[in-house]
Image 1 (cartoon, one colour):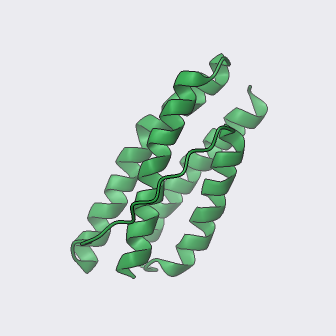
Image 2 (cartoon, helix red, strand yellow):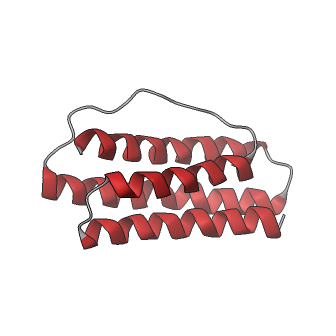
Length: 119
């Protein structure tokens, strides 16, 4: 379970950096704003999850070193949404941790909507 949580935390922390790059590179104001909101909020949300997980299950000792950069913001966040759905089943089912995952999923889905419909 620790390995799954470490992967979940790592991918979502990296998503903050990846979307920050996308935010800086886009020529669309709507994408710029949507990605800016995402990268500003995802780090805090995943930090909340990591601290709650560690409070319940102990400190995660090792994180994966993988880092993937995608150029298409919609495709990237679609992949993140799929990753969250797949990861949710492997992570603890405690209500507080699942609620934190819900909050992360809401941010991802809201950003996907803005990128697809408002850009």
